[in-house]
Image 1 (cartoon, rainbow, N blue to C red):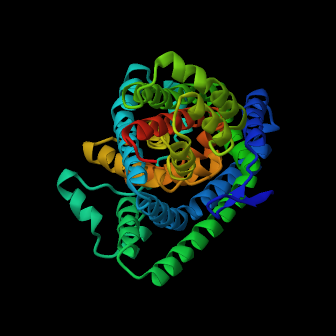
Image 2: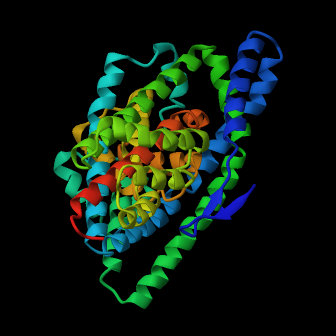
Length: 418
């Protein structure tokens, strides 16, 4: 496994996305071809526990990793906001876009699934079993959930919402203590997050084996029906990202003062790099060139764009929440207003923490807390992660579009500021 240091100091871990997708297909094909033959039973006896153990290993590190990333992500966002008027304007736009994107997804995705239901034959198998999930309070009790009597008991019970809120409050409290103490504590959480990311990377290196086992079991139960359900999932989640991408064009035209054709032409090379690399960081040079074409001042672009790449993931709340909502429909989990509010809030906080993470790792550590906060079992994520490489293209396209759009808007709003 190849590991590098990212600009944030976190290890960048390569995951076998293509091998994982291939294992998903192979598992389905093998189960379908062997269905009804005596060779299927011994293969399932090996494949089913292999998939189950891999899923448990995947769940193991979510809590400490999320705590570490929320603390460091919010700390970095607050530090960026202290960089002057331009920084505060940009960070304010980041926050607004993330909250609006999450709210849009909470309204749009359930409506899409109601209009175009998940194929009924595959729902039971894709659900991965009911399982236990974190408990979300009702509307009257949501404030109490923000302040649990015992944060460790809340964590042990799988109540992700109060844990994430506590981590956010802890990160805010760090701004009120001395610089030496703040740096020491922040470095501890950076180290915690980095170590947990390495462990998640190790687990995901085994994803082809785990996904193959889960796909074999699923294919034996549902045949080709599950393939249609996965295609349905990709379309629904990608639709949430598409809305965010289109909103980026609207932002560039309204607040950025750019013409539609002008902005579209400038984004063509950026989109080409984004599709080929699926990385906002790799697209940064192309984004800088696009802002030059759009007439954005170099001083603004050189400051805002790197900050956007570091702390701004425009599509994350919308698409991560869409995955959690889809998992709720798969498992038959009712989505109350309080659950959706909790999902939007946690999706916002977690999006600040997905700094320079590979798409597959980001999927696991971002969607898991949202699903837990909404009371949704996370078992379906083990199979959905295998096709994440396809929605991840829309994630990157939406992110780079909003990065350039917000930079244009921040530059226009800064007046004579450099």
